[in-house]
Image (cartoon, rainbow, N blue to C red; front, side, top):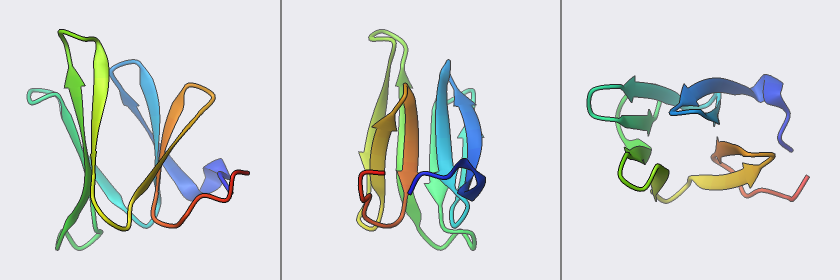
Length: 84
């Protein structure tokens, strides 16, 4: 379930990105990226890249990470989304 209390919100080029609290997110404005990593930084789970030319966000997922688009927001979650 996408309960916002289980997420940290990041503003990423005008789009709200909600990262599940089991992850850590690092935003790099110069590189126009946001890396979603394990809390101990042992592995990355996803990279979001802002494509200025297309005015779009590209998502490069890794295994164990799921993405849900809901109400104009991006949710990055570890578990399978049940549709709620």
